[in-house]
Length: 149
Image 1 (cartoon, rainbow, N blue to C red):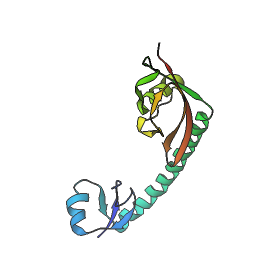
Image 2: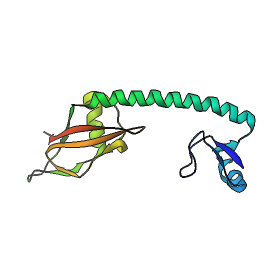
Image 3: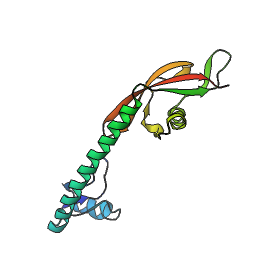
């Protein structure tokens, strides 16, 4: 049965794709969850227009992400954490700590899941991390971990 996916289904198809699926899979999983519709001629024409609009929106989003990437180049984010007498951090620096620091210092919201920390940060110092902004756009960010007073 040929269907058009109204929503992405991991490992099967992305939103807007047309695929052949088994009748039972459509009837028992996709249709009750409103993840797909049967691909009639009328529905296919409507989705062709939607697909074009989705591509335009995706390109606009990618342009916005590229602009955000340029804004992050060359900035240093200061993260304040409590330290022990030995100079190590209590608990280390996590993605949420960095996201909160970026929000406080630059008024830009970044989801904690987008922050890629290559190795655990357990001491005061300067570190390079990556941020995955989405749509394949990544940028680097330098953070400086300092003692909270």
